[in-house]
Image (cartoon, rainbow, N blue to C red; front, top):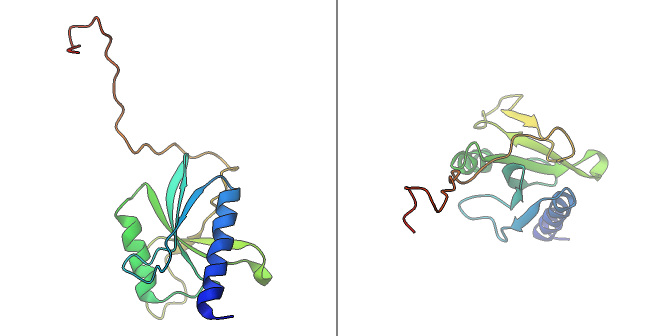
Length: 143
């Protein structure tokens, strides 16, 4: 199996995992472009996930920094996440990328990330400003 086919198969595995948790997922086929994002996952109560999928969890500095940068465009409504195979190739492990990668460092700016909505519910993220409803009989109504 080619590296491309193996990567595509893993992206489908991550997509299926996130969809089973209630996310809607869009796959960016051929994500070798500028954003380096393989999957974009939406959930009504959680931040937007920009996911870079790597079967072995190894990611270049350029890819790491670019995914972090793209997520920064949408902060705090988006998180950069690295998805890799779980222990012994079972399941999926998610790691949140919280800063630019440090060359030759033993630890990188990242934390484990749990996308499962069955834990404590975070505050809902609103993408729109609330609109106050105006009654028809009020002096502010011009319709």
